[in-house]
Image (cartoon, rainbow, N blue to C red; front, side, top):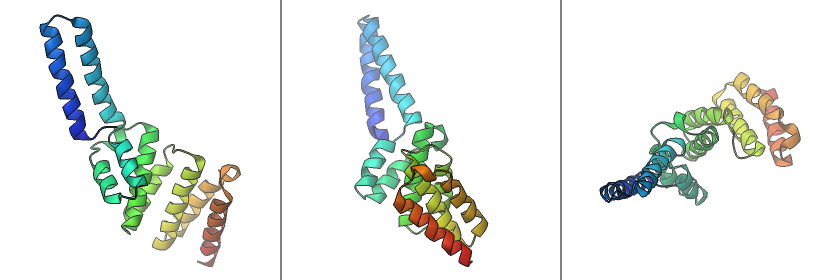
Amino acid sequence: MFSNRARILVIVVFAAMLVFFIYKQVLELALVCLLMIVLVIVEYFKQGTLVLAAKHYHDKDYAGAEALLKQIKKPEWLWDKRRGIYEYMLGNISMYKQDYEQAAIHYDLASKYPLRSVNDHVAALVHAANIQIRLGNYDKADAYLEDAMTHEEKMTAKMKAVIEKLKQELKKK
C-alpha cells in the first residue's frame, strides 16, 4: 500500500523507535517495532506498489500506474493473485501504448495466475487471442479461445459475443 519511499520512511521511523525502546529497556515495544519492520518488508516483496498502481490505473493515469508497477523489482515474488493483477494491468497499459508484443506476453502471464474474477481471466485470454490473430499466430489464438471457453458458464454474454466474433475471424483466415 506504500510507495517505496514511504516504506523506507516507515522503516526508518520504526528503526529509530526500536533503538529508543531498546535503550529504555522496554523490550515489548521494541519487539512490536521489530515486528512492524518485518511486516513492511514482507509486504514490499509480496504486494509491492500494486495497490497504488491500481488506483492510478483506475483513474486512467497509465503513466503513473506503469511507473509504480516498474518499482516492483521481482514480480515473481508477488502473491499469485497479485502477480495476475500485475500482469493484467501491464498488458492493458501495453495495449494502450500499442505495444502488442509486450501486451501479448503480459496477458499470457496474467492468464496463468488467478485474477479478481472469472471474467477478468477470460478477458485476459480474449485479449491474448485477439493480439495473436493480429500478429498472424492463428494456432495460438485458437488455443487461447478454447481455454476461454472452458469458463463459458460463468462468463458474461458480452464476452461470449466477443469470443464468437473472434472465432468467426479465425475461420476466415
